[in-house]
Length: 342
Image (cartoon, rainbow, N blue to C red; front, side, top):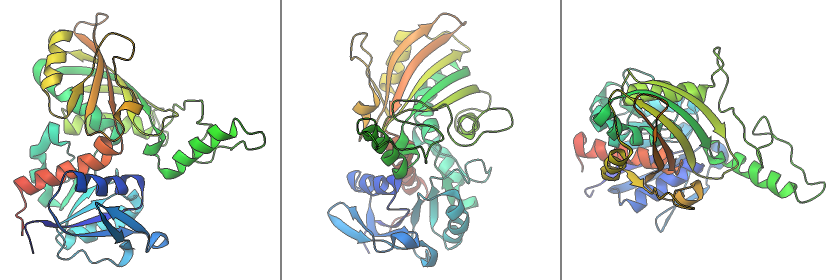
């Protein structure tokens, strides 16, 4: 064998799985051998990896022995069944589901923020990928927190339908078309209300205190990845956008941070691109960020209603930084810090 790894992608036919294959190829991740897995109903489906075509194998019966890293992009139920099986056979699992994120023995990693946490992977042989809306936010918060210590964050999200999956993208498309064709109206099935020309303040299930699970995830994950002392409150909203999550973030710091200095700090920060001209079009929107690796920050400005406040607008491709890219970056860190090739 060469100098690369033996890689598995489970859930290769979904939005995130396909994106993982694209990014492994684009970033020239050292792959010696690759297997793509899917559930029985997708058996034999073909996936492209660079200029190669791969046939999906059965996740149920796949033997992970001898494979180095498995990227999981399947639901929590299937993950619960197969991740421990892969991990026990010596294959490190990088999991995109929410199943292991809050497990104290499983590192939850965003490489720009807490790369060293990867070292704890060996406890369970599993590393968790955060929620898409958390990932881009903490990349933007980290360098500011290092400089002026964040006390509290208020975030409102504008999350695209690709975060739900391919069926949701179809629902948005079909409802939109249905608006213009009499008799072609499409009733909501993926979402509880119409998503075309509408916004829905409800992502994941409701909890006792009135927050949704998505909102709770942002709180719990920010504490685990960035700093447990940060207070955060979130309102997560689904918007009729195909790909790309946006966030309006209000930050209150311990120390004063001038908007100009914040802009300079973010310009230098890994994984961030600042596009912030105070004119029409001088900011990034979801349509602009699709297919990009960066987390974009715009609209950086002082908030004078609190002692030390800043506002910013943060946009990223949720299938990339929010999911597949972050997972591949974790594998890169794992490779350089922990695993020996070949």
